[in-house]
Amino acid sequence: MLNENHALIFDFPELKQDIVYLTHKNETFREKSKQYHVLDYDIRQLELDGSPTGDERMTQLKLQRANLKDVLYKQLKQHHDEVIAAS
Image 1 (tube, one colour):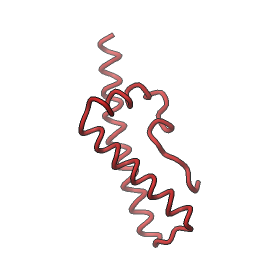
Image 2: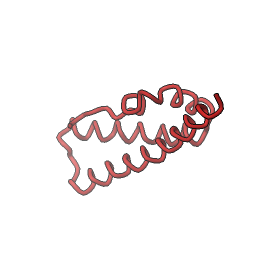
Image 3: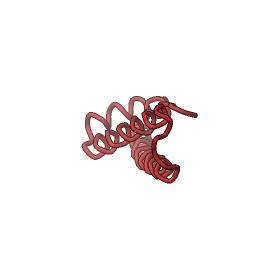
């Protein structure tokens, strides 16, 4: 779907508290999250502009976004599971 916002908070609403916590407390998560959101924004802008880049480049950008999302999700899930186990 064109111009779909893939912000972590939209894609993982059940992990909202974990996203907020890690964004404030974990430098690595914060930086990766920032990279992810900039990349997602750039992809959406390219889609709105009619994809003025080759299909191969767009595929690379989307793969990079998916890889970053996987890394971030693993951190979020690990944090979430640790919080649940501690309670």
